[in-house]
Amino acid sequence: MSKNLKVVTVTLNPALDLTGSLEALQTGSVNLIETGSLHPAGKGINVAKVLAELGAKVTVTGFLGTNNQASFVELFESLKINDQFIRVQGDTRINVKIVEKSGQVSDLNFPGVIVGESELAEFERTLFKLSKTHDVFVIAGSLPQGVTPEHCAGWIETLNKAGKKVFFDSSNKALAAGVNAHPYLVKPNDEELSALLNLPLKNTDEIKNAAQQLQQQGCHNVVISMGENGVLWLNQAGWLKSTPPKMEVVSTVGAGDTLVAGLCWSELNQWDKSQSLSFATALSALAVSQVGVGVEDIDQVEALQKNIKITQE
Image (cartoon, rainbow, N blue to C red; front, side):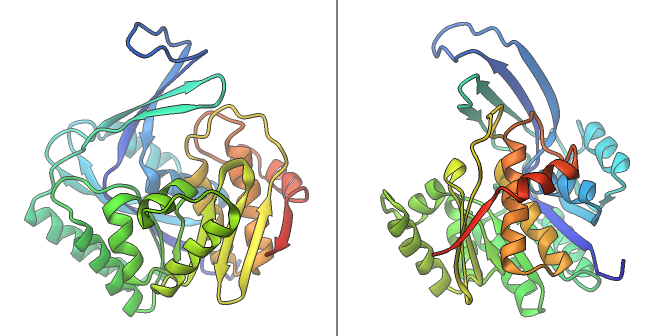
């Protein structure tokens, strides 16, 4: 295979995800979890896992607590992922995700490690060294204490000026700063887009108008994930929309990260826009039918891809 399938994913604030499933969450009372798991996560790590399973040569970096890094290291070794994480004293946070039988997910996300100046400097050296040998970067997730939205935007802008393609997926202040740093692709969901622009988005036209604002701010590709309603993608070629078939939802955890991984894999393979969107949507749709992030069966993805409806908007 002659294509350059190398990619760097950046997870500034990784987490161990403690996921529990039950019939229905009763707030303010004792809940008995039916099944549970504890596994390495964080948006960029989820993206890395999917990309590695698809066949990409993945390097990961960001900040990782030294006290509980063993399961992360084990994951990277098992998938032959190149570990360039900067180690920080303390524990990587544990995030709690409660998955109800209806598919509703309640997240309890904790703050994360505290990053100092020396660790910031070491991360920057690592990132810009990797930029000499890699063209595609995924920066995904929230920011730990010590990393500002301005830091994040600065890294995106520097990579962009060096001709690198940055896929950016975050929220809140990090997203607000990052969209002004001209990422190659940004992927808010409809709720994140609404919060970013402080606008209620009640229908597709309002979502499209909001996405156009991001494009005018310098985002080359604006991808809006809308759950079961599909995905909207705006770039200089115009609008495309994908609509997946109705899926049996087990858990929506990681579906957005899987979509980003699918879009990134498509870019590495230089697929056209329609093929890229149908593949990424199929990958993400299948993700909601399983617990945990990953590509269990590529044949299933390709079969589902044939049932993804792609329309010009």
